[in-house]
Image (cartoon, rainbow, N blue to C red; front, side, top):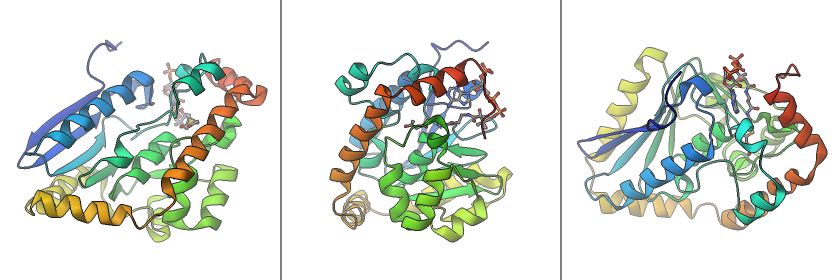
Amino acid sequence: MRNETQPRVGISTQSGVAVMTLARPQNLNALSRALTDELDANLLRLAADETVRVVVLQADGKHFCAGADIADMSTMTYDEATRTDFIGCSRELGRFPKPVIAAVHGMVLGGGCELAEMCDIVLAADDAVFAHPEVTLNAMPGAGGTQRLPRAVGRHLAMDMLLTGRRLSAEEARQAGLVSRIVSRDQLRSQALALAEEIAQRPLGLLTRMKQSVLRAHPGLDEGLAFEASSFQACFQEEPFLQAMQAFVKKQEARR
Ligand code: CAA
């Protein structure tokens, strides 16, 4: 078994591009608190690094990310969730000042889908599948799923996905506006890097001003994110959510 003290996020930097790789494939890159802390520490460092102009976020293993770490969450109390303002995902990615390209493949679920929603360009492998299965845990998203998803795909498809856990193929997600481009699985990393290198040729000041301007296309987002976070934390007081997490951990229930 892999040593969990090894880095859970790999970083390589060259030519103005930093590539961040989720590296917890044995747990399908589930977003444990340790992983999200590491992700956020790296993002803060890359934000301050003037040699970095563009970031690529990708993942090792069969799937991009199976969402928040349910085993990790299953031991959390309501008091702890509210005291730490827990959202089960990265805090820094959504406010990262430079362009971020998500390069996703396989399952892109829950908090993993929220990571993609936080990015600026989403490059999807043709095998990518997008969903918000929180509802199947009797929970709701906590890191922007109810805010950024409707802004990307519109309220009606977003509610269909959020209320049922419905999965979208890469092509359905592209047509809906959640995905920018689809590439073959074996070309995903090289295409993401090539796109990042193309963008990184532009001046950093221009790239950050462009991004800050586009982020202002969504007034009210911060207020919505705060409401969502406290609504998500309220789930930790509810028996159906606590039971569903235990069922997942104990592998007691077939889940979609
Ligand atoms: N948290 C913790 N561990 C997870 C995980 C998760 N979200 N998803 C998968 N794993 C673990 C499994 O427990 C399993 O561990 P073991 O090998 O130790 O048993 C390992 O990863 C492989 O998973 P599976 O055997 O289940 O792999 P699969 O190919 O049969 O199924 C899957 C893949 C459909 C993604 C399935 O793992 C699954 O449904 N995972 C949960 C997805 C989910 O509900 N995500 C939402 C979480 S909540 C959230 O993200 C946001 C929030 O704010 C609440």
